[in-house]
Amino acid sequence: MLRLELRKTQRSPAFLGAKIFFDNKPSTFDCLVRNISDEGAYIKIESIWDIPETFRLYIQKYGKSVECHVWWKAHGKLGVSYS
Image (cartoon, rainbow, N blue to C red; front, side, top):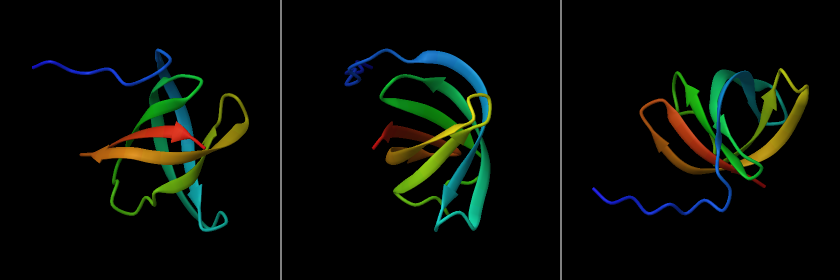
């Protein structure tokens, strides 16, 4: 199967604990960032069904959060770009 790579920057492998925040922070989900770039990330999460199309991703190691937009969802995985 031929895969067309649409990313502008290459992602680096990662293993970073993170949290997803939305609804002005009352709702949070633990997740794991598996690869990351300056433009987006690949995230593993237990359940994708309650995750909205936009949310804040807080990466604990860096102590910073970024607004994200979901590009795709599949079986406990999210592909996001930074807004």
